[in-house]
Image (tube, rainbow, N blue to C red):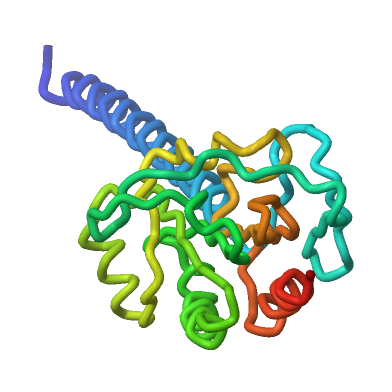
Length: 219
């Protein structure tokens, strides 16, 4: 076979190799894009500025136009057992605070909306410390205690937070009360340990006080 006749064969083989390599690159790009979109969707569902309660359940909540849900005093459900170790390594049982109004805030150091609201929680917790109000955090999905502790230090949070990296405490609530995928979330317990108000989104100082003040004023 002459050199002239071999040249087209080499050219055809090179073209087939090039086309195969290009197909492989397209498949890889598609796989990376799919994985990226899936990760983004998971992050959005896990940490956002709003959300709805998971599942059904009759929690007797009435949701206002600002997204804050409240339950009438005679129609509230008790909070579940919320006890365990805090970020500081101490034992805490929310039931020990009966007789006080308790503000429960679900947060994670990885969550930007949690960072946006943290300064308001730090401020209001100090302002209401002598008014029979106890703030308690529930830190979720922080596998590194140092990150959670650094968050508290950065925002001047002096109240305790239960360390709940797997979200098991959130699952103890009656169905329809909290959505484990919605962080941050806030609940206010009345002096009897029952759930009086709920927000499934990040709170401003104004909205936090709007939730808290009516429960504090109850006799």
